[in-house]
Every structure is written in structure tokens, then in C-alpha cells.
Length: 169
Image 1 (tube, one colour):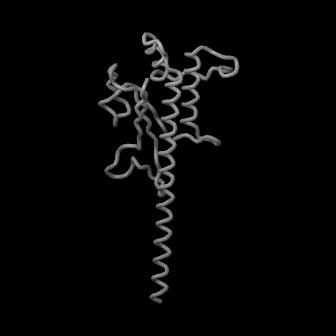
Image 2 (tube, one colour):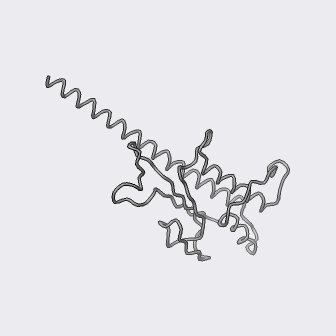
């Protein structure tokens, strides 16, 4: 009887460890995906950078302002550099917020692209100083196995986030 109780406790402990492993694996996958998406956007911004310093602010505004739309045929028929940047950014946003296969985005994600050195933990605030680096800020939801979100846990009011400086830009 004692051996049976020990065996049951061992099996229950093993099941709990498996569930924790699954949760941690999912959270790790989301953080890796966030990192990949942030680096992808940084590469898009560098690829679409304006070489003329006098025109750089206008190109930067494509990424820091409202999201434009995908320009149809831009990759086949060609388009202007600013249309290419707008199209690249719009496609990135679609990928970030996708909820269908083959590309799943980050759940309930939000982003901010701005110049900032002071408010790196704050999604909405940016210092916007010209000497500050351009940063990509991402935030998303992570669920535990019991269905509650990380931000809903007692003592934790923040969602997981990632801040990536884009240098050089």
C-alpha cells in the first residue's frame, strides 16, 4: 500500500513537471518569435533607410506613424522607395497580428516604434529626442496552463515586452 502511494505521488509529480515544461516551452517560443519579429522590422527599417539626412525624417515617419497599406505589385512591377517602406511595414504588422496558419503572430500584440532612451519599459511613452536611438517596442500576452494571463497574476501588472534598439539608422 505504501509503495502504491509513493508510485502515485511520483506519477503526479511527473505530470506536474510536464505541464510546467509545456508552459515554459510556449512562453519561450513566444519570446523567440518576438525577438525574430523585432529583428525583422529592424532589418526592414535599415533596408528602407533614406541615405539623404535631410529626407531621413520623412522615411522614419513611415515606421513611427500610422500603418499604411500594402502596395499591390510593389515587388513585381516596382514602386517608389517610400511605397516600398510603407508596404514592408504593413506586411510586417499583418504578420505580427496574424492568428492563422502558416504564420502565427504574437497574441494580443501591440508595438511602438520611436526614439527613446528613458522610457524603455513604458510602451506608450517615448522621449523622441533626436539623439536617442530608434527602438522597436513589442508587447504581447502569455497564458499559463490554467488559462490565466501573465499580467493577471497577483503582483504582476505588466505583459511580457521586448525593446530592441535599431542601430545604425
